[in-house]
Length: 281
Image 1 (cartoon, one colour):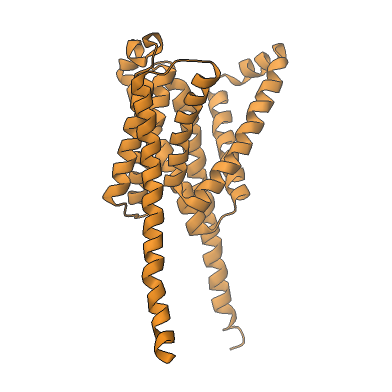
Image 2 (cartoon, one colour):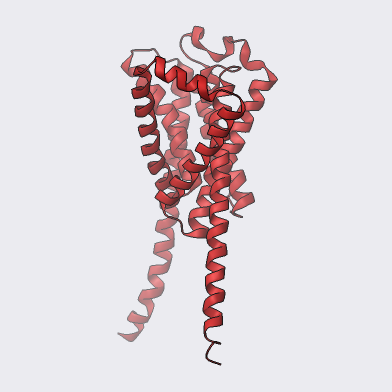
């Protein structure tokens, strides 16, 4: 009889242990997806131009919403899908119609290849899945940011190292670093910045969700191009101005609509709390 109270405790510990194991397995999935993302982006650059790749990244809001519906059972309204499509269209106008048609992706010949387009579609699918799955891990397993980054990065390192060994690229990579020691500092800086950015990315996903993160990244693509045009005095075509106005207008309208809805909810709940006080007085 004295051992009976220990049974629920042991069962609870086993449940927590299984929960931690499932969380680590899920982190391994995220690590695999992250590695495939990097590989897909690098491979896609062989078949599509950089502007076309940037254009594809602007459409990441829609895959995130689709994965959010599948994985997290979220229900997005028609207004959310409308704003996602509008933002994607605005970014498309901005990138596809530059003032100088010499740098237009429409004048490139390689982005029409089926393999390049397939890689970019795969990138969008994996990218949307990764950020949405991270959102699910934060909400379902109560993981800390540094734990998720550590296990995800460790899994990515194992996969990348295995790929180098299986393809006999490990020794050539080491030999390259030995022959070009200056490259080590560039790799160190790039790795440090990438790691720091992962903390900001994970914090945004944990606090605000995957869709908000996708919106921020889409806006960043456009803002970086705008700042580049201003800094290097590159002219903007009228279609680019239209695209920028569409993107920022859609984001402003979405924010205004959300704030208006929140104020309406607060206003509707306030009179209910004040009626009993008025009756008592």
